[in-house]
Length: 303
Image (cartoon, rainbow, N blue to C red; front, side, top):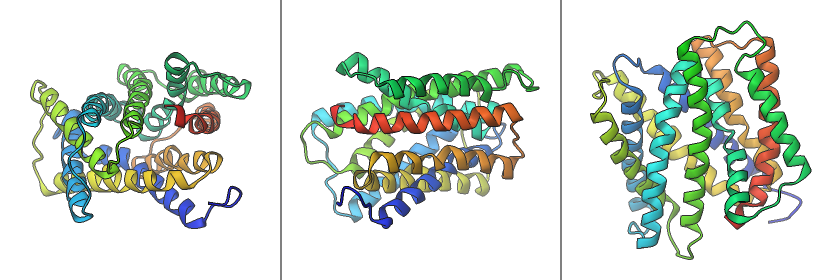
């Protein structure tokens, strides 16, 4: 690949992947939580996603079996992704699709912390500035200083959103380590197994909760399948195939389509609205995430 010019097809592919996953919180909100609990939504999402990905791997004649060491990281990633979806789906319901997605994308800062603690990486001044910017942005985004009503549910949604970033960073780290063990593995198969393990963990959590766990109509089944296919399978597959072909500075800004579009979809489909200060906070946070993602992608090879 030319170091100065990225083929436009890869940029469009990455943008398409970001578009796909931007609909994930919308699909979650389309399902009434009184008919299907947030953990159950995550269970069916990952179960259907695993079935789709395993089918995809078989049709593509990929190696399904994973080496033992890779399988262990896949189990770990599945457990962490279970926690990620457990908190993120609740954040979507309690605080809104846009805010939950922006907060979840703060994983780039937790990834940096992992790099510092585990791999003795150094943080640049521009990165430290982006952390400060993100901190200010999140404060404004959640509504501090605006007329936002801080109900108990809303505060829970904010806390769950911030926790999403923590789980998400652990999930990405686990997947990266699995891919860097030196084995020639299929990414589709790795994601299929990880989705399956997530479904098993989520299923166990779902069974001890009191929320409904079985879809009651074809509408709900259809939304769950769309969530699994569009976001869980297609979106992440396209992104994973495109990222290695694109410079970090370009991929960072293209991937910001996800939280930006999720905020737009929330406003269009569910009349979610942000106050003026929250809009400023969203902008600052997204810009900070961009600078953080550039740094994170440049250091990715060390993970």
